[in-house]
Image (cartoon, rainbow over all chains, first blue to last red):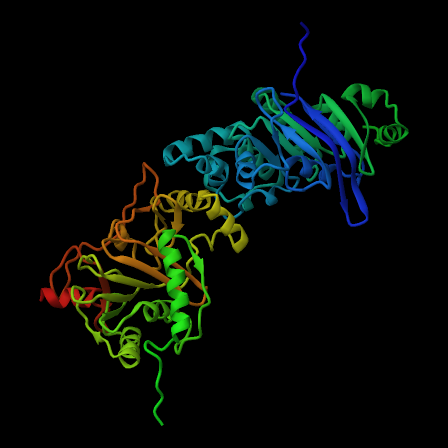
Length: 260
Length: 274
């Protein structure tokens, strides 16, 4: 009997329009446990729209997103009651925004930001929350002494690492990332990518990563999907797609990367 | 020319609508119910919510007590008491024990309430989450999902900054194991009196147009952490007038030299002890 992995999330024929603009044109994809799928394409190709539709905060005009943890795609994002979707967003799934300020509470200390998901899950012991906050600060390589500082006093790279700690503390099995390294300078980006790669393999999460940066996709992703004007035009193993692109648009995209 | 007002100022239809809303509020303890708040002959912030609730539930047989910060003789208490005396003709009192209906701002009387009494609170801001989440649509969703991690985040931050939960008044409570509720700006010291109280507690927010209620014998639990339990602050100084230690005190500057005295904030309680 051959082993066939079962996806943990599957999208079928997603179509979404903003007025007359077709943002998604019958997009289908699957995510398997523990894999990193990069969605690449130029600005306006529909990457973030697709990510937000898979995450359940945008409703598609047609198509559906099914998911499930135990080898069965028994639940549908679009028909899930709001309360259950919110619970999913706060525990089993995570979302890392491009701009950490969209996710962090800037008026609350770093420690408080990290443990919010634990409190939502019912943790009512301050000492335990402190321990977990310190543990995760170290994990994302922020000096534990900064636990009681406000995120406003953090650099952009530290804010992004804080957002990652805050998201990963609930051990999500599926992580959505929207350009997580795009706002950072090159050296900080390298450190963060290294950290992300280690955490992703250590936590055994599946990741859907939206990026316009092919280098980021090559470093993190096992598979890649290329988008153009709301369609997935090419998909495959990362190295294969980037080294031997089939679609003319992918060839253009790959050849337009500046030499390092 | 003499002006005749309806009994308790508001017309019968309005009072009936408020009572219907109050019934709903009692049926869902701690849940805020919108209502069509009326213009009242006093400014917002002076008790327009409380006064409408009192007007809706008061009857000719009631004995009314009105307190402001525990006191029967401050401007707000005196004017609201006079207002109801002139528009209803009911008996008024300063005695907590004798009153059947008590309208209050910022205190719960020291004398334990008994079954059959109604305590009406004046509420400036009924939404406990309003400083943490500015969108009303979002706070409604958070209540619907019983997601109160935002308030826990505030408590976490207070312990982190001050070493303890430093909420002195308007201490957040969970009513009937379900809704996060503002007890109105009473001192945290008064919050335990709300728990399993034999009296009916009604809350009116006039400007914010919300009513809510805590029926008699309902669980009212202050939010806290297991290792930082709810621990309200009160002075250990005895009252300078009656010597009471356990009552809640006002700290009053008594001369130009800055000398201070601690005096019971509940004037009725203090007078009975002297």
